[in-house]
Image (cartoon, rainbow, N blue to C red):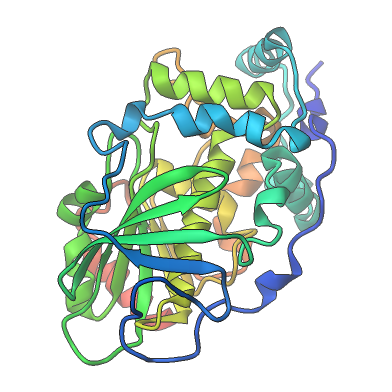
Length: 345
């Protein structure tokens, strides 16, 4: 008989951070802040260091050190299971033994609690604006910035920021996410990233680590799942750190932020839109069952507890914000995306 026991795999987590109700951005349109300045409403320190180097720059897909260290850092929030118990969960899904619920069978309150329990990331969300974040400016020519984000939970990752070449700041902002096998430069070159500033939007994109759909990703996914964590939650958290920066940045209007996801980036944000700070609009090109092995490897979207409710998760139009679905890679839909963003931003 099929069962839905995977819904309750993890103990309940703490409640949401009430600070999400207010935007943590500066209410100022001052010029670019000088080095070593901390934002007024969020704990963010900005420094300039053109010599700063990202340890993962040569090969982000294999840069797993910070993620493999995460379970020890977050040990107080772990819910360990054995490798055999994890294998049994995955095998039950593989064999069709886990009941999949229709969207109508999953009330919104049940879905929200299931997401929070399965992702086990309340401790990351709680106090996010108060947590120290250091942003190092490595390059800045006025319209392009290469940044390194350093966070105590997930280490250091790279963010690229493009700004319009006009005097209309603060601009609406777009956070665009790549998928497996991609990177931030690919967002700029292949997913219209360089075109957003020409339409009046600030564009941020980050480099996900361990997103190669390979053995390195499989190792991290399994290590995190065995401790009651998920790589998907870490992806979401890193994106929330970028949103924290954008809401703080004087050149960007923190009330007008949109997300544009591609592939694995969309899959993460199909979850995140239900627990992120307010977002004005969202563009997605992919959904997931939250169990989709690739050549035998587990990918970041493997969250066994979410498999039974994935049809409800994939009803992203029910998440409470404007949503535009586009074909995968949206190669001919840029004008449609811009029109959609113009409606809501």
